[in-house]
Amino acid sequence: MKNVDESNGKKWLNVCGILNINKIRETCVCKPKFVFIASILSLTLLQAWSQTTYAVHANIIYHFTKYINWPNGKKTGDFVIGVVGDTPLYEELKNFTSNKTAAGQRIVIKRLSAAAPSYDCHILFVSDEESESVKHIAAITAGTPTLLVTESEGVTRKGSCINFIIVDDHLKLEINKTNIEKRGLDIATELLSLGIIVK
Image (cartoon, rainbow, N blue to C red):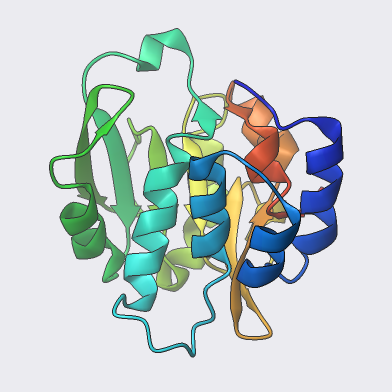
């Protein structure tokens, strides 16, 4: 997985605290896909965009497939994204990923229970209403190549890999690199530099 060069990486670290689209475009020359995900992450929830909040979540989660590397054993068959909880994200993901693939794998969206005995997913999203189950779900999926994604305060310290948060009306990501690596996953430097690193 390729990384941005050191000079560009420092520029990104300097600007990603506020994720300002105009400043990013003026100061950085980056890969088109990287510019795209940075632009998506910089959306303010108060702006009059045609996308709903969860449509933005779905867009970003889809692009995680381009910045997270799964083990070879997970690179065949369907690419499964599981959703725990009664959340609009389920339908948004189904709509957004329709006819899309992840590195050639067909993307399948599944609604799952917080009480499921196991989770055979590449990405597993746990909604805010099921946040009390994060620690339990993290334990069940520990050591498996499942990227655990959440949207609740403090859950990156309970096993979540990437957590959506709102800071000053901006959508941002908390990223726990240790949790990601413990699951046998690799995260690209480009994505790491866009998040708030939690240990």
